[in-house]
Image 1 (tube, helix red, strand yellow):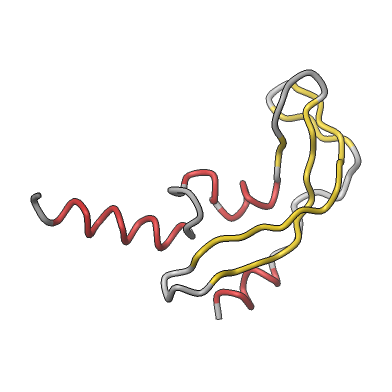
Image 2 (image 1 turned 90 degrees about the vertical axis):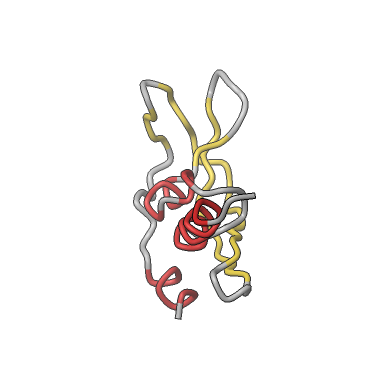
Length: 92
């Protein structure tokens, strides 16, 4: 079900240039979006990658739309939330 929802989400932008925090990014290529869902499966989808003009790294508008920038590594937003709740409920 998670795969179906992620596949239906449209790319936020299809332009060749995007301004991100006053920095210019240009479309580079399509790259894989991969994350682990709460059932242990891996979701894979292609998304647009933008490169910054004057600095290293890239920008992925779809990641921002799905909230993946706030997650712990390769996990979905829900799985990251569940891990935080579980980890904070028990003392070491």
